[in-house]
Image (cartoon, rainbow, N blue to C red; front, side, top):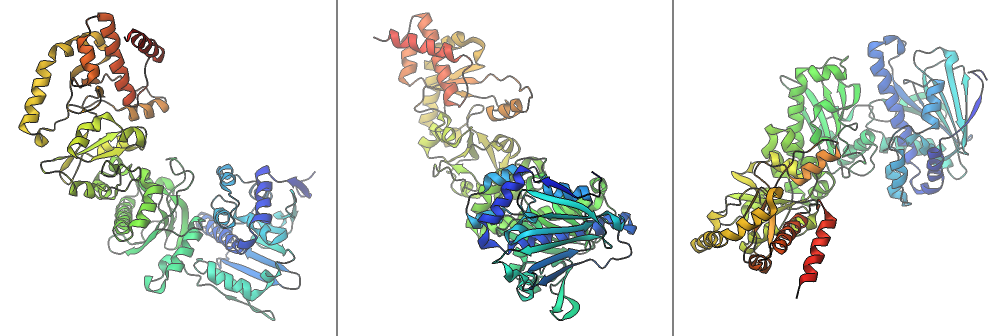
Length: 624
């Protein structure tokens, strides 16, 4: 078979599944097809304009970039044409016969059967072209890659029946033309007035002219949208709906954004930015190496998607555009790493984003709660990565705490400080793998008894956060499970004397347990933390916590060995029983049992679970 012959090929399995969705499930959201095809055409024009910077011959002297829409109410067709980058034969097969994006499986798994929710997913995973089949039972694509000869045009066609055909055709013009042959019952979309209204509704913000005939009898075309980059227009001209529609164009996310910030900076560095805070997290949010960043324009010329250099990694959820007047048009990703202007813009955009979040938290707490639920764990990476804005970020953080014992993270550090007890100089917290483990941690017993609030940290990033967030409002952070807990400022004289006498009174017991446990622990001492539990494990002041150790081990790195201290509560009946035990073997079993209990209460794993079971059985059988 020659390259120019007609080939019939089968769709990728995922495409077949997707087409069934388009044809059968989204009939009440039919008009999304038009905004998807116009957005794709806009992207094709952006790509040509960018490639033509280095290779002007690609534009062939024609820089009048536009999208043209024709309707034919007799033939029942809608045709969308752009003079953008176009496709080769192989690109048509690759782009229109398969879904190459890695999120395809995730996309398909998220389909719920709810038409509105499913419609909102279209485009988010690079599948917008297939929305054509919502209204069309046959789709034709004519395309020629810019720079290729007229003989290298390609004709792609499918009826969404599992196959498509592709062949070479003569095409005098570069770009792409998509012809939709409308299904019976969808002929309304062959009405020029209907299409014109949809263009104004969904694509008014497109930076390229969308043209249609003035009337059915008039061969002359006119621009039906603003055809002006939305971010360049004055804010006074724009309505909320304009910003929301532009967000959908930029992100392919059809939920409304939570907030946005539109600003222009003039002076030493001149740039315009339009930044959005989404309402929901993408499926790959926690993949730190996933595509991220804003769209970069230079003097309204599109340069690149996902320009990650303009915002720090902990703000990777932010979407939008930045348009610089100072950067060179031929700038590359490598040059962005070295250009000093980038640091200035990055600093400004970071501040603008944090100010936007602070405003949202203050003025619209319900929306901020939505933001925190979706993106809070990512924002917690901030204090470790952005020392200059640590205080700003700290004010935006939210936690669970013993104030309500609820697993919702809604306590700010300002809330905590406002509730601190007289004489309290520290912000106390405990870290565990789950909220339940944090809430029931024995390390909190004395704080609960005294009515002192503690933050309950259970996100994977929390230990990393705590290691870099040393203080807030002059109050240092104290991990109640690390080092010797100093509560002297909150203790009465009687409590201090009682503590000292307990340590002296049980010095012999402590020495016996130390000898019994040997090198399994770094120390044994009387606790200040416990009121109900017999014992707990305490890390050294500079020891790595269990959460960070597990993260390192999961990444294949060896974590440094740690030996915690064992703190005992000599007033507990179990310690009294141990103290009264004369038999050395039974004493050793009981001491090890206390250590194992403390390990389990701390959320740790026993080094020898079977030995623990045998020991427990021996003690149970010896009971009288």
